Image 1 (cartoon, rainbow, N blue to C red):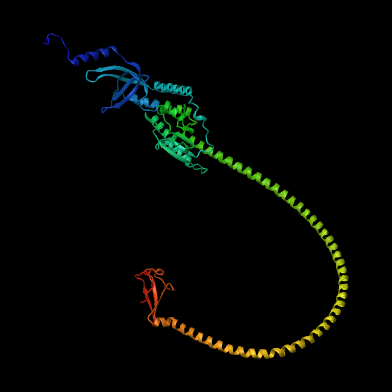
Image 2: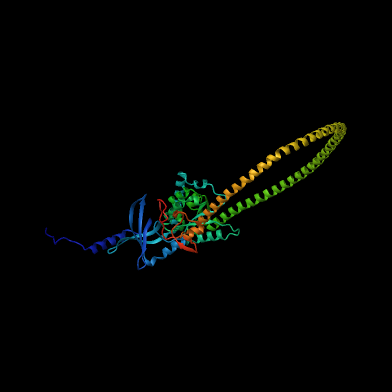
Length: 489
C-alpha cells in the first residue's frame, strides 16, 4: 500500500483543540442533576468528582466533574447548609458547563451546588421507604412486641466513641435512685456510607442472643439531616422491624423523624431522653411495688387487729365456758362423792356385822378343833416315843458295824487317791515350761501372743524368744512353711 502524500491531515492536538473550541461555543452553564459515585482532592487542591445517573441499578450515564481550587468555597457552603460534606452516594443539583481539554479530556466544570435539592431528594427517598415499609406490613411490627415492665438488660447499638453513647451511659449509671442496669455494647458505625450495613450487622448479632436482653437501643449524638440519612435506609428499617425484641431509638435529631424512628417500638429525640425513660419506667415499677407493699402492710395490720379482737372475744367466751364447765364438773364430783361415801359407809357397816358373826363362829370352831388336835398330838407323841426307842436300840448295833467298815474303806480309798495325786504331780512337774526350756527349747512371741504357725507372723515383724534364762528380741527376715509331719530334731 502506497501512502498518498497529497492527503490533507491534522495533528491530534489540532483536532482536539478544534473539538474544544466547538464545545466551548455550543455549550453554556446549565443546572444538572447527578449522583456522586466517588470524589477526591488532588495535590493541587482541585476536587475531582465521578458523576453518574442510574435507572434502577443500571448506570445509564457517567462522566467526570471538577471543582477548581479557586472555587472550593462552594464545598464549604454546601457543608454549612446541609451539615455534611460532599460524599459518595448523595445526589446534587449543580450549575455546570462542559469543558474539553486537549490533554486532560472531557470534564464538567462545577460552578455552583444547590444544597436544598439534596435535602429535598433525601426527603423524597425517606417518604418512599416509609410507604414501602407500610405496604409490606413492617411499619408497626416491632411496636407489637411487649415491652417489659422493668428494663434491666439492654443491648446498645452505637459507636463507643459517639457522644450520644456516653450521654446515655452517664445518665443510666448515675441515676439518683441507685438502679443498676446490665448493658452490652454492639460497636458499630453511626454515620457515613457504610453506617447502615454496619448497624444491620450488629443488629443481627444482637438478634442471635436476644434472650439475654429486654430491649435493644440505637443511639448516636445527633447531626445534620444528611448525617442522619443512613437511618432512612430501607434494609436497616426492615431489620429493626423484624427484631425479636423491642428496639428504642435515640439518634439525636431535633426536627423530623427518621425512618428507623417510624419502625422502632419507641423513639426519642436524644439518647438522654431515652435513658431517662428507662429510669422513669423502673422508678414507676418500684413505686408500684412500694405502694403495693404499703397497701398489703396496711391491710395485714387491719386484719391482725380484727383477728386480735376476735381472739380476745373468743378467749373471754372460752374462759366463761370453762368456768361454767368446771363448776358443773365440781358439783357432779361432789354429788358422786357423797353417794360413794354413803354407799361405802353402808357397805362397811354390813361387812362389820358379817365379820362379827364370822369371828364368833371361827373362835368357837377353833377352840373345838384345838382340843381335838391336842388329844391327837398327845396320843401320837406317846406312840412316837415308843417307836423311837425301839428303832434306836435296833439300829444302834448296825450303825456301829457299818461305821467301822466305812472307816476302813475310806482309809484305803485315801491311800489310792494319794498315789494318783503323786503321779499327776510328777507329770505336771515334767510338763512345766521351765523344765522344757532347760532342755534347750524356747517360746516365740509376736504381738503379745505365742507363735504356733509361721502363717501367724509377717516378714520384718518384731518377735520375742523366751529361753530358760533370758529373752531374745529379733525381726523376721525369712520364714518357711512345713506342710509335712512335725519333726523337732
